[in-house]
Length: 462
Image (cartoon, rainbow, N blue to C red; front, side, top):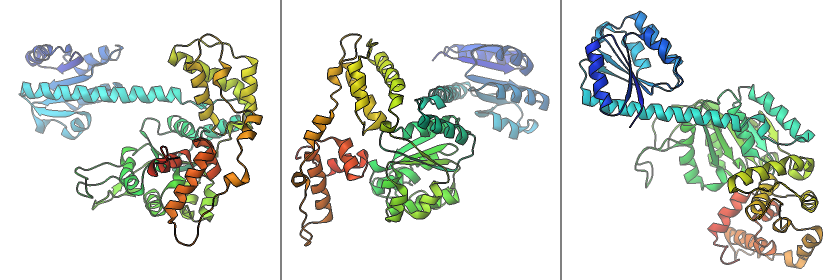
């Protein structure tokens, strides 16, 4: 382990002893006799120490104020204090600044282990801070790309909402329109950008597992719960919890979610006490939530609580002029990832791209372009790998009314689950396993459809 440590000590003998001890473990050491001296050097250097050891014989209030000022100016270091006289030191202030506090004379072996722990903690904090900064640059308002009036309107709304202390927000739009991207933009451009963003697809988990993921559980809460689990509410505390496909959440769980939002408290499964949480909740869906509320699939009170603010994302087919901006950007992205060099997009490619209606929206566009880039052999975008159905081909694929019909007995001989399986199996056969198209036809999400395909083992049988 080679990292940098600063020692601040008014005891030359102790400072030298600490320096020799840590240098044996390959630490790079700087030492200073007073906080003011350390401040003058450290704040001018580009590379800050990961660990600072403070060993003062007399820790006056003036010295502590200097140390606090230096501590606050250094972003990701951990501080260890060696205190000769705990009673003479302002312990409450020291404890707020310190990673840990040891009595003098310190056990040097214990101090060495503590320094390694502090180093790991500081390194973790640095990576998290660096990641957040990188993600904030990546998810700027311009990340929602396009120049059409519809896109400009969405970007304008995002800028307005980023200045608002949001508690809840609904993002609606068809599958593939960029709801996850918008959630990340709002988080990283908002007031809580330094705190965590935690994401969960509600359609991907059954009710029992989803509840545990959201609220956590105590050891022994259910079979297999061997240890305590901090749920996503706790993990996102201070930041943002993004719930994708909220319309697929079980009604009973919706009631618990509403209570958590209203009370700003949660209780782990099997837990006896409530835990305070402070976070903003973004919910996304590709279904019409207002209609779902009318049909009893979504609690009306939850719908009204979530939709204090709402954003609707337009489908790609209504803003095809944005293709001129999107396609070159996506090509350049996959050029870089795959080490390809496409820089010419022929007119016949543009004609096919603009003629297609993109039921899978941006996600489908990205998938098609990725395939073409990966299979390209030179600088020209390969039209042969677009594989987009033209109007003639599409019409020839449309099943007749007889083919599309499904006879379902209503005499009680088939359970509801069997009917569900039959409908999905029929749709798979008619649409050649195009999950995006089938989800659109059945009015559900791709995630829910995939879950049921796996549940009914239809991939092998359809």
